Amino acid sequence: MTPRRAAQGCRLLVALILLGGATAAASCAAADPLPVPAYQAAVAPDAPRRFILFGDSRRTLSEEFWRGRYDRERLAVIDALAGERPAFIVNTGDLVSAGSDRAEWRRFHEENQPIFSRRIPYFPGLGNHEYMWNSKEGLENYFAFFPDLRGRRWYDLRFPPALVLVLDSNFGELEDGEIDAQDRWLSETLATAEKDDAIRHVILACHHAPFTNSVVHGDSRDVQKHFLTRRTPKVHVVFTGHVHTYERFLVDGLQCVVSGGGGAPLTAVDVEKPRHKDLFRAPAYRNVHYGRFTIDGPRLSCDIIMLKDGAWTRVDGFECR
Image (cartoon, rainbow, N blue to C red; front, top):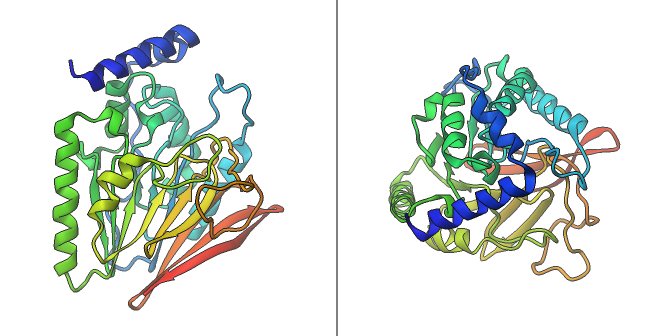
């Protein structure tokens, strides 16, 4: 057993002792197959020239008794995304509260029917909650729910002139060989994109934020090391979640978006002594939201749509040329 796996086992054991193992036991008891959403697994050639990126659509765990519940807001996000009728949707992770709990996937399937019934392509990324309680069972459920991924933890979405690379930033859950394989894949895919005249804008999408002013989470040094250091000139955006808020930083010309506004319990950012310059000026708590990307000729623009006073409102945005 590698030190990484040993550490994972210790964390799981502690969690089960503290929380009684109720969630894990319930997931192990369920044996009936998971539903598979009836949606298109590929983007239609005549799809609208816009797509959605967002993250952290999980509900508040019962163990998170100190946090608020945002069930109404989570469902409002789903309705808003369905109403957008985009070419496709990318969720950067934490789709469900505990990936090994099959009941969570059934709830996710039921709640997202406004999207799935419209056959909008839905592409997931892996968050830490997809691995929660039992990482093996979590991955099994994830790939059973999204069989078209064919077991891929990282993959690309080609939508010229944009290319979205969905990556797994849960480095504590990856073996050394898997980390090396993802690093190689990213380097090779970016090198190919640089030679592709049809691709002008590359978006890196993963769960953990390389930069954040969160009072709960810190910067992901692993994302900085493994993903950002491999950046090539066409990489214009890194779009992440994990932090349940909205932030935007410009780092060496790279738009670094933190968008964890899918309905998970909101958390605050430090606005008094921020670690990084946030281009979005707002109070410490930012409401549920999503990112709408629009292609207009060679240009790619992003609008952040946030729920404010009961209405969906554009609160921020940027353009890549």
